[in-house]
Length: 74
Image (cartoon, rainbow, N blue to C red; front, side, top):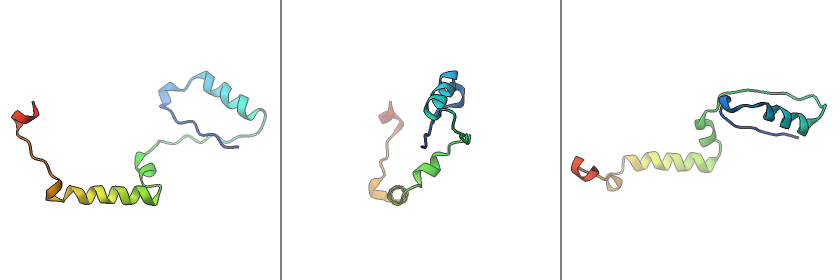
């Protein structure tokens, strides 16, 4: 069985440890702690990569640019 817990480090509480113990009992487990980089997730599938590439291309498309004055922003 695999379980992934994703949360900010400052929100780890004892209840998380009890939850892991409850789920895995006395089995030997491996706990890996790593910093989450959203870029890894965003590039994890071909569809995501294509979507991001298109979004970057859209930045250079003058038809997609909107120009506003400071007065229009307030």
